[in-house]
Length: 128
Image (cartoon, rainbow, N blue to C red):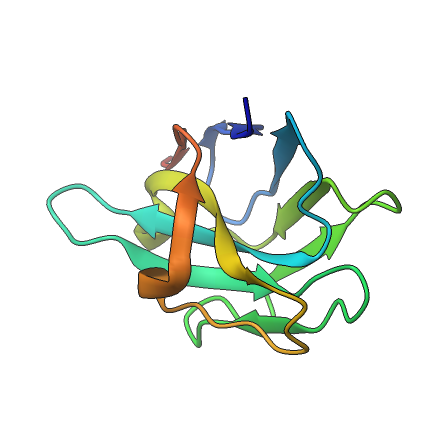
């Protein structure tokens, strides 16, 4: 069964770092863009970052995280990482990864409407 599993969440002080991982199991999604999204308490889910399929590996970031977060894939293309540095309290949210159902696109989008397979989420709390 194809699924995405997030890990790496936790509690960190402002200014700290966390590294999230999104592991794909059941099949390969290396031709598909993988996106990271987050849902702060009481708010809608929003796009954070994405990386296109392994052939292209182009990246895209929301303005609120640009320069602080870095997305990457492992060589096999089936684990996607989100390195989060200089974390702020407003980064507190449940973080989800998801797969864009369209394969082999050179660019990716953080528009959640294109994503059809979602993980269960991992909590990130930034607090002193």
